[in-house]
Length: 58
Image 1 (cartoon, rainbow, N blue to C red):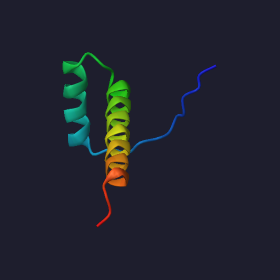
Image 2 (tube, rainbow, N blue to C red; image 1 turned 90 degrees about the horizontal axis):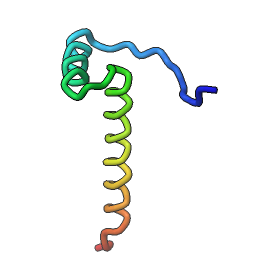
Image 3 (tube, one colour; image 1 turned 90 degrees about the vertical axis):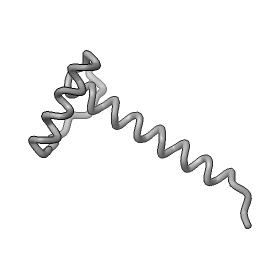
Image 4 (cartoon, rainbow, N blue to C red; image 1 turned 135 degrees about the vertical axis):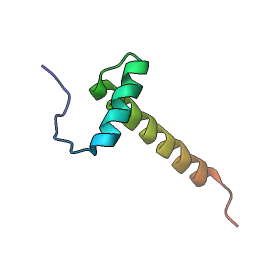
C-alpha cells in the first residue's frame, strides 16, 4: 500500500522547465525533486522556529 498523498499541482511552465533541469542535474524525477525541495523548506522553517523560540526575550 502506498502511503503517499497525491494531489494536483498547477505550476508555471517556466518554473517547470527550471525544475526539470534541476532534477535532471541531480538524477531525480520531477516529483522527487519537488518533494525534496519541500522537505528542505519544512526543515529550514522548523529550525528557524526553534532558533527563535530559544532566543532570550528582551
